[in-house]
Image (cartoon, rainbow, N blue to C red):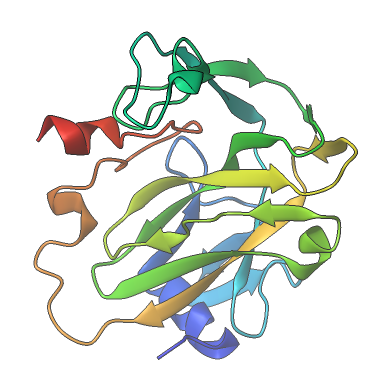
Length: 210
């Protein structure tokens, strides 16, 4: 069942759902829990979701030089590609703004650290206002029960012109559901991205190592 606004408040009061800074403190401009009451930012808390804001850390995948030829043709010999079996390197920057080029892609992070209890499941979706600018936000937005960390956002620009991104923008929203059944330790049991703070690159290569 998806949590509506009143249930989101209760989950925050019970600390089942937390929005923290990088030091693990409740963001004061968001939620202040005092005497059992939650004083939420009326902009952040939506009827069935909570808006999250954009951080100031950016990663752009750096192509690897492919030195062997795949079976489907010589055209890929020596080409610059990102091989999903290899550990991809990234160009990193910390800045209050980032210019994402036309048809470009960048990894960013939410300013907020999210903490879910083992009874809650989250799904990150791009905001409509952002999508109408031609930006696709978070193509893989499942947040497993028990996850704790910032959310790494996969942002793609569909436009034929660059788009300037600003840290602090309400960039996406998290929809929260309550689980039915035992998650058997939740994400903390074996999650690759547990406790991530900065935007974090792909760890798909670890699947091939197994």
